[in-house]
Length: 147
Image (cartoon, rainbow, N blue to C red; front, side):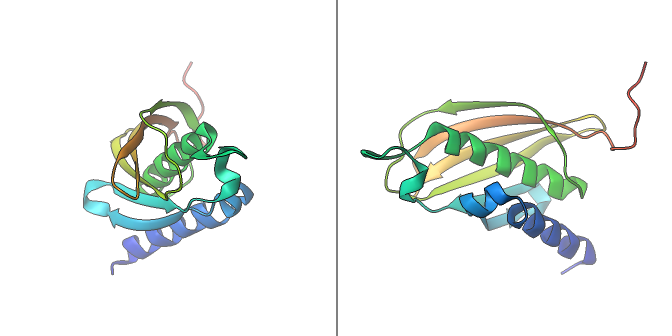
């Protein structure tokens, strides 16, 4: 494994393990294709992720959070640093109940000021649950805004 790949894997591990919200959500990497700037992250179904105590389907906020986590982690791994989310869109296509979720993210653009990722979320039966797109600021932290 190359040194750059090892550093990227270490960054991904840190991005997923450090935030308290992630510790509660418990995302884990299940696939990585660096040549395509792709990353797949999974979460397991748990009762506390449901939208209602009477229904086993996921709360929409959990799905949206997964879109943001995967998009951020995918692009941050490519850039080698954390980046802030500017905008995010999620299209919910079907309910997901009593199933784990897998979210595959792909970097579409990693420019000097803007980065964009597309994300697909599928259930354990490979049914498409939601799609999302995230936009991030890729500007280096020390860069002043142009006037």
